[in-house]
Image 1 (cartoon, rainbow, N blue to C red):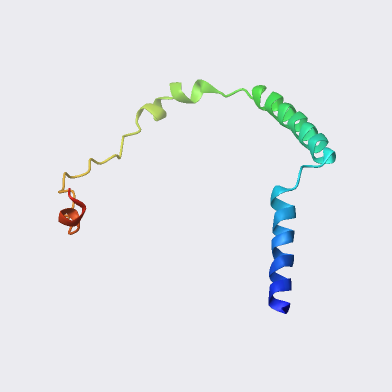
Image 2 (cartoon, rainbow, N blue to C red; image 1 turned 90 degrees about the vertical axis):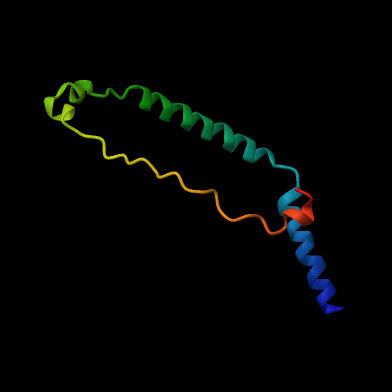
Length: 86
């Protein structure tokens, strides 16, 4: 009986936290946070990047270090292919 009572209490708490309607105060909180987001976006838009770095001769001397991957077989044959009908 005690175990059933604990299980019902846990289910009630989970239901209340996951499926209960949202209170009005949280809506007001989301509106103020979107205002903060707009303010942050306005600050980001005022950032100026100095593109003179790309005109520097030292920047032109950089070399790519990328390597091409070797072509290798895809892997082993699927042992369940005959069972799955493939």
